[in-house]
Image 1 (cartoon, rainbow, N blue to C red):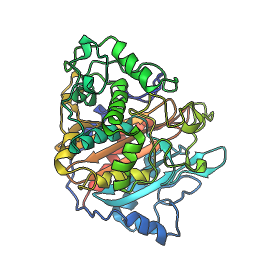
Image 2 (spheres, one colour):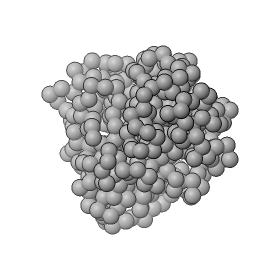
Image 3 (cartoon, rainbow, N blue to C red):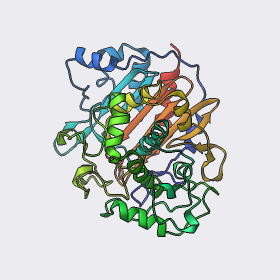
Amino acid sequence: MTTYGDIPGRRVRAALVGLLVLAALPACGADRDRDRDRDRDARAGGGSPGVSARGSAAGAAGADDTADPAARAVAKYLDEVWPDDAPGTVVAARGGDRVVCSGRGPADPGTGARARCDTVYDIASMTKQFTAAAVVKLQTEGRLRVTDPLSRYVGGVPADKRGITLHHLLTHTSGLPDSLGDDYDPLSRAGLVSGALAAPLNSPPGERYAYSNTGYSLLAAVVEKASGTGYESYLADHLFAPAGMTGTGYVLPDWDPARIAVEYDRRGRPQGTPLDHPWADDGPYWNLRGNGGMLSTARDMLRWHRALLDDRVLGEQARKLLFKRYVPEDGGAASFYGYGWSLLDLDGAPLATHDGGNDWSAGRVARFLDDGTLVFWISNAAVRAGRWDVPAVDRELTTGIAERVRARP
């Protein structure tokens, strides 16, 4: 399986094996007050917590956060493990209760703007969890079934692809190729569909797991067909709004450009924000739409985590569909793919996780399904030659934060 410390392509895949060393820790209680973070920020003077010149998490957490022993432990750990000067944001929660949400380093070294809890990042392949949730939501509304053949929503399906179902697309078992080209190629929805239908299959539908961004872009097209509205519009109305998410999407949030993290390459050269790259008027072109490129914040990722703890977006049975272990990843038995999530046990603790990144950014979301612990981190300059490599400490960073959140006082 490909790790994402240094890959030449524009996309990363799930890199899970390193997480297997996390020991299961005692479960902690969960307070699901979804507005607690807003109250803390208001008491701290409004806005998102800032960071010190060094990017100290202790300086970013806010007085109420650091009053929690777990918050202090996480802040201290981040000061030890997060590479000096590497930009990014981290959020951790115990159930619905935020433990820490802190920015580190500059969101844009060119202007000196600091990373914050509300800094907007490209979350890349973590977008897939939203596409999968949209499909499941449409099933609860009676507009589709995951067992439906792709041909119910797409015309002209050739014989070799008539066996592809939405379930196959969701679980990367369709046999379709990973990609049809570069993320920023000006590919329309019609071009994506025709290209996918013309592409040779890597394997017969349902035979084996093979990560496919193309499959998730097709699912975005299915969402549009089944819902009768645009992909992003459906997510905004049926997922993000009920979850209280105000800073997630492609173009509908009407972004303040100053909030969006500028991405930097390994040589420290600015690559602009995601909105500086070629996109259509309504979002990314279709090599990226539905499988990646979503913009979000650490605060909104916490809100999404909270929404998955109760029924506000999806009922219990629908949520179970997301986190069911359908197929082993890459032929192994250590991790499985559900619907938009990779699933594994960490010494008895069930974990749902996904990474994401491009040539410049990298991040991970990890949710412990037993006690509702959340860890999310993201960097807009993940690798700087000779200075830092945030993905290289993925395992240590993710599991170390989780350990401190899950530990009982």
